[in-house]
Amino acid sequence: MRTSSQVSSSALPVLAVASGKGGVGKSSVAVGLAKALHTRGLAVGLVDADLYGPDVPRMLGLRRDKPATSIRISGFGERGAPLDPVEVDGLQVVSAGFLLGGTQGLAVGSGVAEMLLARLLNETRWGAPDVLVVDLPPGTADLGQALMSLVRRLMVVLVVTPAEVAHLDTGRLVTVLRRAEVRILGGVQNMAYLDCPDCARRVALHPRTPDERTIWAMGVARLAELPYRVDSGPSAEDLRGLAAAVHAQLPAVL
Ligand SMILES: Nc1ncnc2c1ncn2[C@@H]1O[C@H](COP(=O)(O)OP(=O)(O)OP(=O)(O)O)[C@@H](O)[C@H]1O
Ligand SMILES: [Mg+2]
Image (cartoon, rainbow, N blue to C red):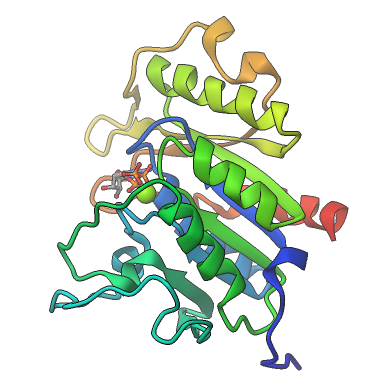
């Protein structure tokens, strides 16, 4: 039986889903992975840390129709007032998007995104999650640094497509993360192929990146190869193998 007492996120295993490239499927993988870990019996917290494009609530079917009239990042109301996660499909979810209206954007100075991440992690009244999955925005060097200073047990799953630019840009992130001694669990190649419904053939969607220019050549473990799913994004079934691989690694950080 889990208690609802506040749990410090700094002590929890945190799995950040990151990429050097935008639009490769980080949020889709983060949501699907969180669900698949939950299906394996884990209590999962999901943190949408993308202040500029908080997509997780929409992907989970949560929406807000009216734009927020005011935004107070400093304390979700009164300073120091805790945030309660929303429970969706058994996941405990917090999002930068809870502060913003449907189409409302936010221009913020440097440091604000980091501050928001700290609040989402530290000032949320977590139940007792076994693991937190964090969806990071693209180009995450700064937020990645912030995350490293906030949590002790950080692991990163990288998302790429087979496109060369995705591997090159993510390769730079690998270098940054390794310099900071962050544990990279491995990489997911998303939208890797399409099983053609009409011709029953497997179709590659990107020109193949020469092996030596991939993140695999940098020693990043291949965790999963996900198909392109028309109209849906990766399915829960597609992410089962990834969840098993991640779950197997959790005791190492517990
Ligand atoms: N395997 C997939 N099959 C089909 N569509 C996918 C797949 N993965 C992601 N998508 C779609 O691609 C788009 C981008 O995905 P997503 O928002 O998850 O990427 P992202 O890396 O989080 O983007 P951003 O960098 O903007 O945060 C979305 O419309 C999503 O539904
Ligand atoms: Mg995203």
